[in-house]
Length: 371
Image (cartoon, rainbow, N blue to C red; front, side):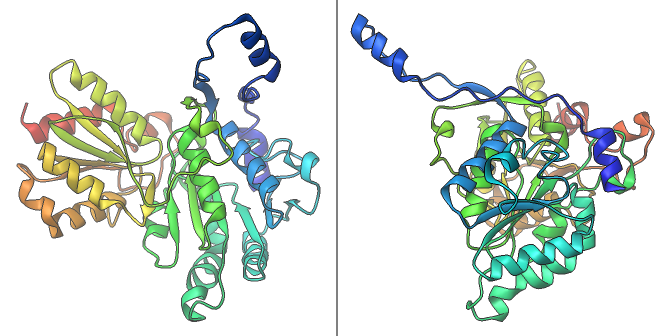
């Protein structure tokens, strides 16, 4: 089934290749003509290409790093994330596996225990349920159970959460599932810079990291700064980012819904409401201090996520705020905007009503602020 899903859904147009950084001949010509050199401009990079760039750089940097998963090698990946890597690094570094998540996740965990640094791709995190014993009992708990003697430097990565038209078994968000488990680090990128910086940090981390990407973001271009184009660029795990400053209300989100929050904030700004938008980036360990600092400024909080409401990421954020110093700064109850508490429907109109939309965020903001 996994192969059929990939073939039918993911023969997407490839994003633009990242141009080489700088040009020695051009710089020399500028120097001879007496022209002033300016800093390299930011470039547009899709999330797909940012992930590909991160994998390429880490495979080149550390010979212990390898990638394995279904169709990641000769087919260039179901989502073309690993495009060109098999041809460049060969069968020992980029490995096609059988359709057996439990099997190849176990191989990857054993390789990590033996000193390698595997990147294990799930075609979708819905399929990671087939391998959850390896992820939780083998990867997450081994360092603790061995008193720190056995490390498991592994990355589990792939698309997570709702896509489009793929129904209940391919649309679930697992941020709360994996964020619940001690021993794991869990990251959830939104932009191309997030994707590159967090994946590189995850590969270099000595602990198991779950990286929850979003299929609908793969083909989306984002501006990538000159700093992020460097091979040394990493984003620290556990640090949120303020995507937009504001004074009236704090919107906290992760993954694709960060973009929805920014769209809502843009609409509300025209009505005089200034939203502060926080991109969590990391689910575990959670940067609750960034959220607290924002609440102390705005006095209002809304969490936005695509997952189900019960025991979700937003529920955890609200609980931590209630238990901490920022609670006394709230002028109204915190509100959660979440996916609907049902398995994802297949029909488009029902699907649209099951995941948060920009209008839902705007409605929640106006309700909290009573405007």
